Image (cartoon, rainbow, N blue to C red; front, side, top):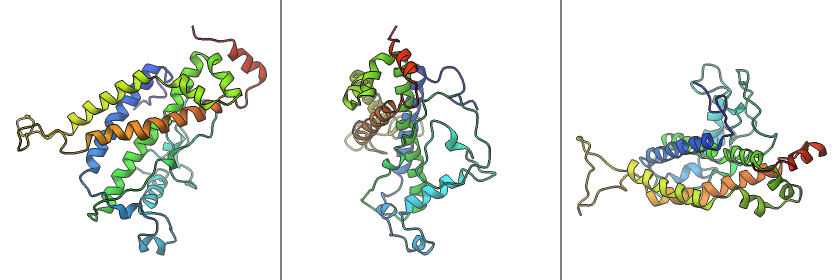
Amino acid sequence: MQSNLTVGNPLSLDRIRSVLTRLEDTIIFSLIERAQFGHNPRIYQRGAFKELQEVGFTGSWLEWFLKETESFHGLPNSQLNSNKYTSPDEYPFSSDLPEPILPALAFPALLHPNTVNRAKGIVGDDEFEDDGNYGSAATIDIEILQAISKRVHYGKFVSESKFLENPAAFIPHIQNPNRQALEDLITKPEVERRLLMRLAKKAATYAQDFASDGTQVPVNDGKINAYSKIDVDGVVDLYESYIIPLTKEVEVDYLLQRLNGLKEEEIEALSKRSSS
C-alpha cells in the first residue's frame, strides 16, 4: 500500500484535507466501538493494578498497554508496521521504545526538522461505570488515541503548506515570536464551522441502528434512534474543545521552529516570496 506521504503532493491542502476527513471516520467509528464497554475508570488510574506494580510498572493500565503496544511495533513478524514511528505523521506516546527491527522507510523530506510532539498530552482520565473489560477497553482506547494523535500532528503539514504558500506573512511573527498572530494566519473560522457541521452529520448517521431490511430503527416515541451508539454532541465537542485547539498548538509550535537552522540569506530569500 502506498503512503499518503510518498505519492502526489503531500503538502497540497486538498490532499491534507482528504487525510483529515478520513481520520474523522476513523475516530468516530473507534468511538462507536469503545461505547460497547464501560468507561472503566480504573484503567486510567496509576497504581490501581497490583499486578503492574509487581513487575515494577507504576503507571496506569492504559499507559502500560500503550508502552507494550508501541514496543510491539518494533518486534519481528508483527502484524503492525515495525517502523511505524519513523513516519513523519506518526508519534509515539511512550519513551524509551526499542529500535525498530526493519530499516526506516524512505520518506521525502516534507517537514522542517522539529521537536514538536504533543502525544503525551492527549492521554486523559475518565470516570463512570466499570464492566471489567479492561483489555478490550484499553485496546480501543489506544486506537482512538493514535488516530487523534495522527490528526493533531498532521497540523505540521498544514503549517508547512501554508508557510510555503506565503513565507513573508509568517517570518516576522516567527522571528519575534507571536503565537496569536501565527494562529490567526492558519485559522479559517468558516472551515472549522463546516468541519463541525460535517462531524455532527457523520456521527448522527454512523450512530444509527438499522433493521435487517436496512430501515432505521425507531424508538418508543416514534423518533429515529440516531443517538443509540454514541453521544453525537460529545463527538462534536471532542473536536471543538480538544482536537482543534490541540492541533492549533502543534501548528504554532511547528511554525516557531520553522526557521531553526536556516542561514540569514535563506531566511531573506524566503521573506521575498509572497502569495502569488
